[in-house]
Picture (cartoon, rainbow, N blue to C red):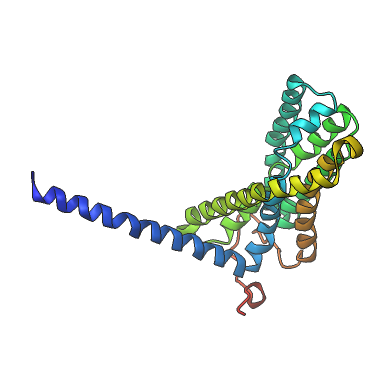
Length: 250
């Protein structure tokens, strides 16, 4: 065997931990930058909060729909309505983001999401679920709009890293919510047995999504002046100078 092959193999083995360390450092660096930049942090609070709270809904929502008399075919129809409205509303949200800025481009879909979650948590029949899925479908682009706003406030050379970092953060927060679901569900099952309280446990878990989206909307409303989105007469995006108030130095 050629000794050079062994050397190349050793170098590759040594390089792997170094590359992983570099990737981890880059991700942590982006996380710090997101939190330090008020423009980015304010916009990303919506998908961050939703990633955690939505994880509480996923495991129990099929059982909730079954208890309301929905079969697998009906669940598929509801999903079809939601996905169709997601596709139809995404270009509208993008136009709002370009023309009116992130306050409308992100806060409006997040508000619709909160309304949909509230209707879903109070649902008494299939018609309630249809209405909830209509609102949820119209809110489907909020995460993409937050990511678009993040990209706008990132140097072009770093945008791929920034988008990947945002995705990693959302996956990590969804994992956190999933881990928290099991003990939370166990406590609620013990305190609110279905024989006595019916579907109250399901409704409480589903309603957490209202607080996730609602919290993001409140933050966006309080920071509306900060999230000003400037465009030229031709509609092209203008670079924005970062204000000192946009970055937390302490």
